[in-house]
Amino acid sequence: MTAFFQSLGMNYEWAWFVATVCGILLIALPLMLSVAMIIYVDRKVWAAINLRRGPNVVGPFGLLQSFADGLKVFLQETIIPSAANKGIFLIAPIVTFTVALAAWAVIPFDAGAVLADINVGLLYILAISSLSVYGVVMSGWASNSKYPFFSAMRASAQMISYEVSIGFILICVVLWAGTFNLSEIVMAQEGHGFGIVNGYFFNILLFPMWVLFFISSLAETQRVPFDLTEAESELVAGYQTEYSSMSFALFWLGEYANILLMCTLNALLFFGGWLPPLNIDLIPWFDIPGIFWLFAKIFFFFFMFSWVMATVPRYRYDQLMRLGWKIFLPFSLLFVVLISGWLMLTRYAA
Image 1 (tube, rainbow, N blue to C red):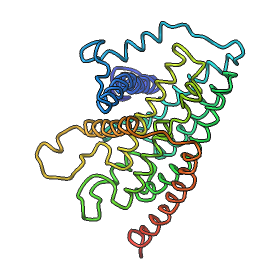
Image 2 (image 1 turned 90 degrees about the vertical axis):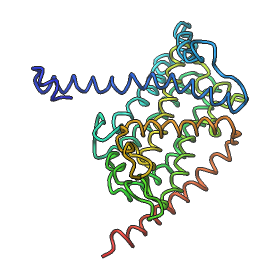
Image 3 (image 1 turned 30 degrees about the horizontal axis):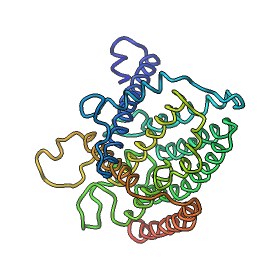
């Protein structure tokens, strides 16, 4: 894209700047539209599982319901508690929303279709996702209310706990792929399966790590059964209790942007990203654009997120922490040893 703007007569610096801004908008604007639509899909899936209709009034089939809700929130008054720390109170949702968007900079949508194709893309994702806890803690503390504060402490402990096991899971992926670059990790999944399955996804040895990663994704985004930060019976609405209008909407948008990010990482790290699911000799199979395959996989994982939310009961807090520290952490650490041993016996054997 930089070369295109240079061809219009710009020097390299201005061409790079304009190309970068266009790339950011090309990701951010469709992402915001996608967030509005997946909220609609989320509610429709819950309704179908619970034998209800879901949104069906605003627009055809209720498609404009999310936009109507957004307009309603936008027109509401922003209320700041008198005892709150006003500066931090207003910055917290901005931090949450900004961090949720920043992570998409290294996501490859197709071969070469990535804003920043850096060699440490996976480390960047891990670093950015760890920053999201700051928005939660800032909002809980700045509200100067006990319920948001308790929720913020729960959320920070929960997110930090499951990030540890996610780190070990990602080590397994990096060991097998031999790189931190997300595009190269996708290409490293080509044709694996121990000869049992000829497809574009990681081999069966890493399948248990995907199961752990998917469940940890639910915990990291505070989705059921890990939504202890918003336990209605005791914390009202968690760290968002004192927020209203667009400050509340920024939390909502950031939450769903993170959910989409985790669905994308599930597809990229374990299920071949933009590659077709199977390596079969069909004429139109490989003519389908890679971004279609990626979006189909993202939608599949999002459906699983919604399915879990509509059917699985909430954990108690002690159960949640025990699952993270006493089950996921030892199991993921064990697989780091197993993957390393397997690679030493096969790939790196003299």
